[in-house]
Length: 160
Image 1 (cartoon, one colour):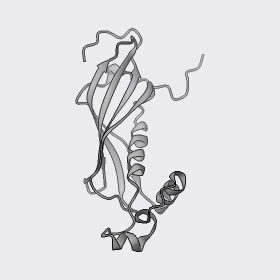
Image 2 (cartoon, helix red, strand yellow):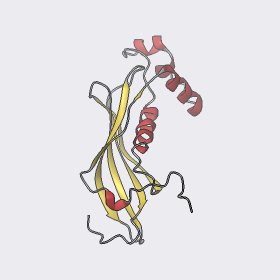
Image 3 (tube, one colour):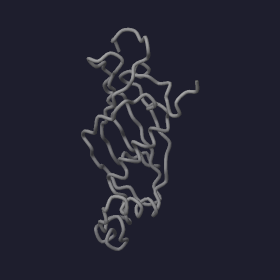
C-alpha cells in the first residue's frame, strides 16, 4: 500500500522546547498585495496607493499585516514538519513591529516554546514562537501559534 501524500515523518516527540526552525524566504511583490486585497476585501490605501502610503510616512506601499502572518505560517510548512498536524489551534500575541515593503524578502523563524502531551493518547501540542524577518535581519512581525500533532506510534514516555 502506498503512503498518503503529504504525510510527515516528524511526530510530536521529534521537537522539544528550544528547538528552532527556519523557513524559506519570499520576495514581496505588487502581485502579493493586489491578490491579497482581492482575496480578503482589504482594499486599504496603505497597501494599494503609492502616493497615499508615502504621504502617511512610509517609503511606499506596505504589505497587509495578515499577509505577512499568513506567509510566515505557510513558508514554515515547507520545512516538512507539519505532516502529522491534526489541527491548528490558533494564534496569540500577534505584533507587527515594522512595515513590509514591496521588494522586501521575508522568511519565518520559529522556536518551540512549549511541547506537552494531551490527555488523549497519541496526541501532543507544540507552541511555536514565530519571528518574521526581512533581508536586513529586522524582525517585522512576531506571534505564537499552537498545533495538535500525532505522537509517534508506540512512542515512549511523556517526558520532554
